[in-house]
Amino acid sequence: MHMLYDSDAYAVVHVQPTEGDKPLAPHLPVLARHGFEIVDKRSGKEVYLDGSWAELFQQQITAWQINTPTQEEVEDTLEGYAELAQKPVLVH
Picture (cartoon, one colour):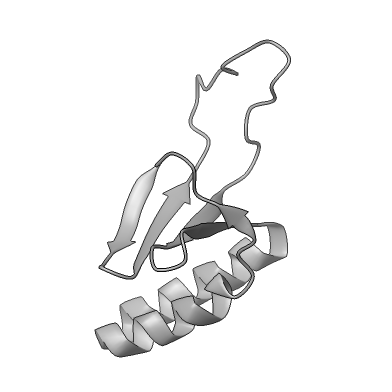
């Protein structure tokens, strides 16, 4: 896991499988592809983006690397993704 962004309102973590990753328990699978976890600290909810959602978010990150956004622009984008959040954050 790599922390990509952390503010008073949001946290974004990039989750990537690494060689040698093993399941925590034999019945649990190992993550096969990367994804992003976005935590809305204000609502206490999180959303995990994988598949095409993760690819779309990766494109946004690449665009941010080319044209550095303001914190307000980043948080406006994260707010859009956070609207998808349904899962409460219990332990983080």
